[in-house]
Length: 284
Image (cartoon, rainbow, N blue to C red; front, side, top):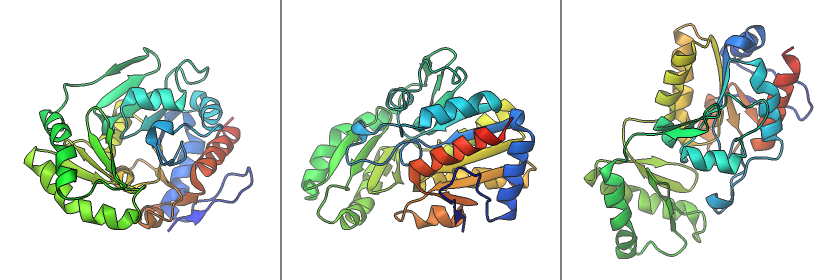
């Protein structure tokens, strides 16, 4: 399990050998390193209403200080790319001219250099589920405290506002998995949220393809949720292929599994910002 970073401005030391090798590679060859980060829970604090989520106040300055010193900075998120750009305040920021946002687990891509989003046609199953979901939830008596988030290429059901969020989550997981399967979709569980989305794309696939595209020789990935586990696995695979990597968990008691897999655990988005700031300061 990764150890908590301290609260000072110093760069923390990963507790694993692989993590220390990853950090050393980033510091030794920053111009060949990719810094990739989740959005919600990593760059932005988790809030009851995702529409109100905004990047931590220090996130953009930290990214802008670090980005010119490394090969690339990418935000890898389940949100639509354009939404992450707006909620993050990433557009038009000096220092972030080459930022990339891989939205919908890599199905969409926003490049700061062009300011445009590129994406394939949406999966037809998403529209079918979107139409069926309200009646489906009503039929199984799941309305109280649950709510639907429209995500364009996916639909999510949140239970954080329920009287017992975890019980509601577990109750809905099976029925929603069956509903998703009927329409050719899968369910991606998260922190009190179940997302119905197309198969074949995840943060691991997106991260691996981006690292290969950039030719990176080192990678850092930071995340906070179950949806980040594929990206953690991708970094493990890259490390076995000779690309050093550092796995960072934006700490949460809700997702112990991620913390146990991490080389380094920091205290939420504020800890991520402190890490990025320290990394930028260390690279000359």
